[in-house]
Length: 205
Image (cartoon, rainbow, N blue to C red; front, top):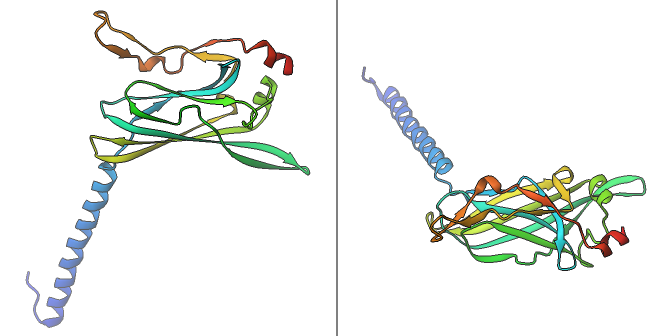
């Protein structure tokens, strides 16, 4: 079947152009969707309030679960805390100070530590405060992936029910049988043990 006449040829040309354009756009969208670099990080399902330097700290941890080499990793942590003012509930947002907010290489797990001191919005919080206050910890990790040769970003968050008070993470890495390399056990990323907070903090509560 061949177009006959100027108008028929014009319509056929437009249809051919539209078909090629649609195919090109679909190819670009699929490529962009599936080739987008990811951080391939696994976060712990919980955050803990653990003893830290004669006080306490909010901690969570993360670990890479692929062989991608991540360097220059940094973390930004914020907290949204719901408060009641004049009978109206609203959320206050705080930037949390991190003991070590940037590392050169992310090869094993990384335990992110926010010391609860005078500068922390959680200073003076008791166990009941953590249980009864609407809290969300918002996490963003950014790192350079040498495989993709690009910066990758991954986000996570922890809500009130995912914060365990008076606990400490159990180490998730150990040497192999020949004691020549380190084994990172991702199945232990959520393991913790109960840990008493310092007596001075319990007296404050």
